[in-house]
Image (cartoon, rainbow, N blue to C red; front, side, top):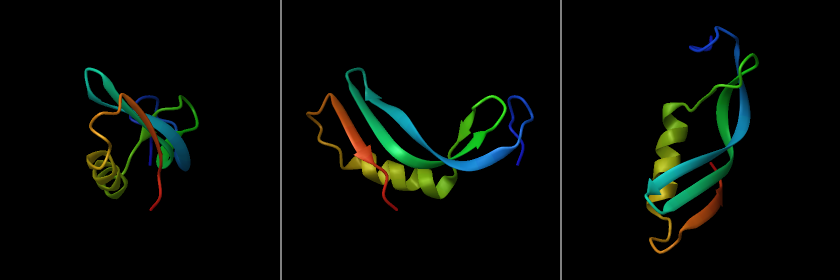
Length: 73
């Protein structure tokens, strides 16, 4: 697969990704599988991974301002 930004090659890897759930809530998902461009560093998340992340985000404590989760398949 080629990067849509620079045309570089996308390689499987892991990344730490922030998700903003509201004006005052951020969740960081660590060690999440991503496709990362070797040229510019652009990251893509495939559909099954994003579905799993959405499930994880749905279980976050509503009172938390910042939460850090480890991705686990």
